[in-house]
Amino acid sequence: MRGEFEYRHGFPPGTNQVRPADHDDQAAARTLFQVTPTPAADLVTFYESIGDVTWADVGNGYFLDPAGDVLLRLQEYGVVDVGTDRKAHGLVIGSNGAGLIYVAGPDGTVYRTRTASLDEPELDKVANDLRQFLELLEDSLTRFKTDGDPGYL
Image 1: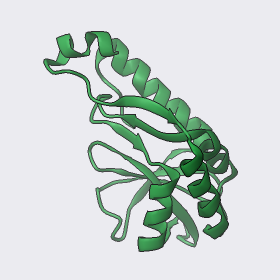
Image 2: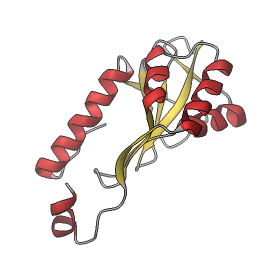
Image 3: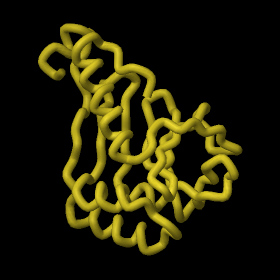
Image 4: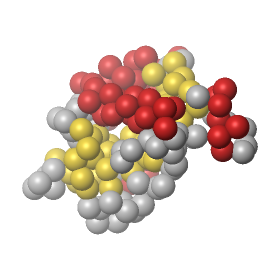
């Protein structure tokens, strides 16, 4: 993607990486999952290995936050009510460059807000679990690399 990016878009690429988790990330992840009522198992596994995902140049951008940021947001703002009955609690795990927010539910379901706000959020289910969500992200990268359109995620 980087090789053709500047030619296609007229400016150099920004940060586009999947950063491995370091010791601080793993410590934040352990703390996060000690204070989270019912963390999704996929999210625990993810943060054991991945520090964060930053794809600033794929469409408007895709960002999966480091565990430390997820923990800080949890401490400052609490959980997000998710699910059809709004009784399940999710964690904000990232966003896209258009300001829409990704929330992981306790069962692993990943939701996206309809607006850039968590005040009375309206959520759409985008994936059944984190694995499917990561596969959708990969598909977005592949499409973007091929034809410049990342799709709907």
